[in-house]
Each structure stands twice: as structure tokens, then as C-alpha cells.
Length: 190
Image (tube, rainbow, N blue to C red; front, side, top):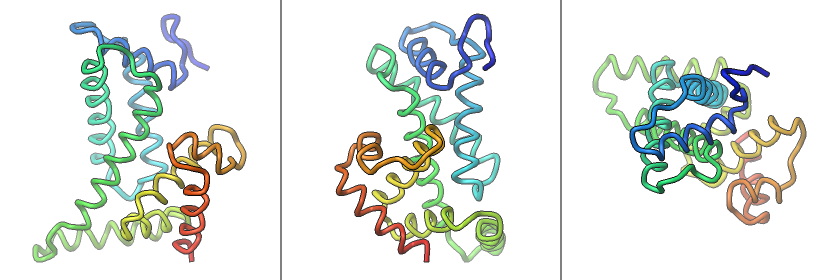
């Protein structure tokens, strides 16, 4: 694990320090914390939403950090779980961007070509789970999208298969809601 000027290289710790620094008006965050948080968000976004362009993913990560600044200052303190807040904010921004792309008018030929290229790239380069997420997004099943992305995040963090209760605790739904969302998601995989 990398250490920068006595600072932990842990995303969670960096996000908490960044939020605390943002809460203090006029304080400048440590560059290592800001960069660690930004690169962590970019990796998360790339894994989940690689069919968005690199420039869009950078904008989403930067917007999530800017929103962390606003929320930390609004609360006047470091957020209790700044890393989870950042991940959720970045995920929501990416989902909103996907919706905007889907809703763009198709009468302009260049926009139509760009959307077609993105769709082809998405289906050629992503696995079945990512396709299932795209379908869930298209269907407007935000609960399934949140449950599955939280499930995948926990599975990555813990290197295992999390229970529905563990996922429910993370995303704020009941374990039966999580189970129902996972059942619905299985249909999106077919």
C-alpha cells in the first residue's frame, strides 16, 4: 500500500480526509488524497460504465468530487462515510449520463452515428452483467441497478458472494427488496 506524506493509500481514508478538509472553508486538500479519490472513482466508473467515453467518465468523477465539497461544506464536517457517498454519487451521475445519451435526438446524423458506435462498443466489449445493467437502466429499474452495483462492489471488496442482508445494509433497502431486485436482474441477463 502506498504511503504519501504519512497518509494512507486507502480510498476510504482518503475520501474521509478529503471531506474533512472540504468542510473547513479555505482549507486546501492534500494533493495525494484528491488524486487517490479521483483515480479510485475513475477505476470504479470504468469498470461499471466503460461504454461511456473517457472524457465523460473524467467529468463524472470531477463532478462527484465537487459535490463532495458542497455537501461537506453544507454539513460543516466530514461526511460519516465519504467513500460510499462518493461511489453512490458517481454511480448516479453515470446513470443520469446514460439516460441523457439515450434521450438525445436522433435526427442529427453525427449524433446517431455516435450513439450507434457506443451501443456497438458496449455490446462487443462488456460481459453479460454489464448488458443486464444496461437493460435494467433502460427499463428504469433503479432499485435493481443500485442493488446489483452494490452487490458487485461488496463482492469486489470482500472477494466473495455477499448475502442479501449485507447488500441491504449497504444500499438501504430491506433484504427482501434486495432478493426481489436480484430475481428481476436475472431476467435482464437472459
